[in-house]
Image (spheres, rainbow, N blue to C red):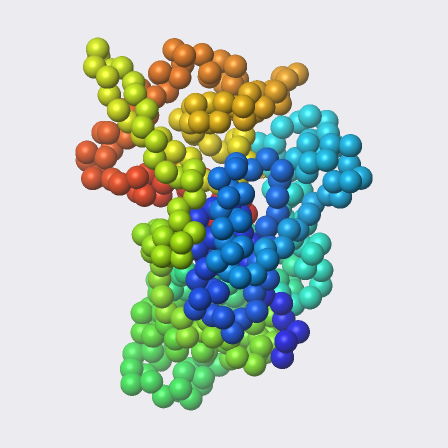
Length: 372
Ligand code: SF4
């Protein structure tokens, strides 16, 4: 059956880029539509990454537009919506930007077609990506041992399905059937939670677990259930941050430029110290999720973009509590660097952290649609 669409959103971040490469190399039998949603305010490093990916994937990455630029006086998605929102800058609690420029164009493009959306959440992350509320869109996480979304797992492992799961495991005749049935027949309760049951079954055999889930999906409206076969069910890999960097390096796409650590110098107790800074994520250059040291990175590495970010701060609106005009004062920049240097060096000495570990620590917060 070919009525199901397969899509993969490229945010400009490392994980979605690596996932696109991974899917094109490991699952060429799946005809994936790669797409991106441009906010018009991304870093040049992000546009570079997307153009390199275009050649590695051997396929054009579609642009899902949020506006018709030729009909907008602003000619740019972010500025267009900012005008509609009366100059009200987005923030973590009023994140209209992601809805208007990423989620809505995605859902409009998909329409009502049954669609599988592949998302690059890694095996070392503890979060779910954007899960569409639309029933025709199902999210799959190929980098995780558990490729299924939370709603699928919740319904599948529901105690009312115990006999279905038992029966289908028995049909597969695995060697460790007694152990599997012991876990399957133990109902979910306070003493044996859904998470414990999921992990216990995944530990017995990931591929068998996926096969039984696939059989169950055939009786539902989930898009995966409409497929005759789905090669991802034979995937039992669990990819972590080092694997992601490896995929990017091996493919020739390389690590997105904004992750590369750059030296900065700061005076502490009369001594000049050298620290490193970088962006921890993709997304708009003025994204309100960035840390203070990332604003300093923007100021020093992309001074024109920093000035452009300042130009949005007016009439009581700012990207964060501290105004950028204040942040760019040299004493303040020094104080931020000093603080960053002391924090990272204390932490790194304690834990022996690499720059990849620092990215891992910084990336937890924020929006999966923009940064994965
Ligand atoms: S990167 Fe930040 S500012 Fe840009 S759309 Fe995403 S959340 Fe909004």
